[in-house]
Every structure is written in C-alpha cells, then in structure tokens.
Image (cartoon, rainbow, N blue to C red; front, side, top):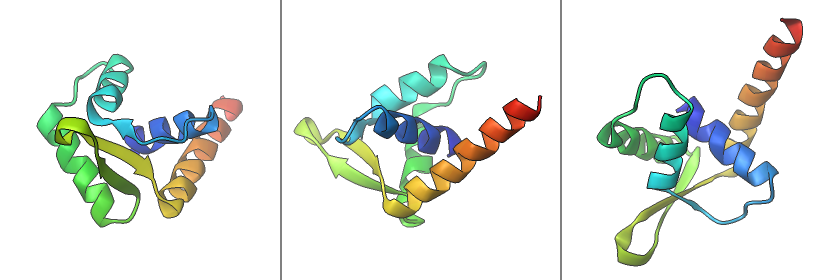
Length: 91
C-alpha cells in the first residue's frame, strides 16, 4: 500500500492532477521492486485503500480502473515520504 501512496504522491508533486490507471501504477511499482506484485493482489490493496479513505477509485473508458489520492491519503503519503527522506539523510 505504501508503494501506491508514494507513487501517487510523486505524480501529484510533479503536477499530475488526473487519476492514474491501475496498470500504469502496477507496472511502475513492479519496475522498482525486486519481487513482483500480482495484479489481483494489487487491485485488492487498492480497494482496501478506498475502504480506508486513502484513495478514490474512478472508472475510465472500457471500465478501466483509475486511482487518485484523497486528502487523507495525501497526508499519509506525505508523512511516509518525509520519513523516508529523514532515514536517507541520517544514512
């Protein structure tokens, strides 16, 4: 779940305002990891984040799923981001 929050946060920081497609998110996350996340597990996690108020789910053309941070999710993602930055700066 952290990966999704951080990636959506990074996209927003770079000026992205639109919801991001599931496969684009999953591919980006898997490209940055040593082990792959199965698409079913990924979707389950995203739906759990909707239930917890961290992301919003949107439907696009052909009923594809798209995701966007909520205000609560943005706050959580920023906290995680800052913790990572602090860990890296402390070496």
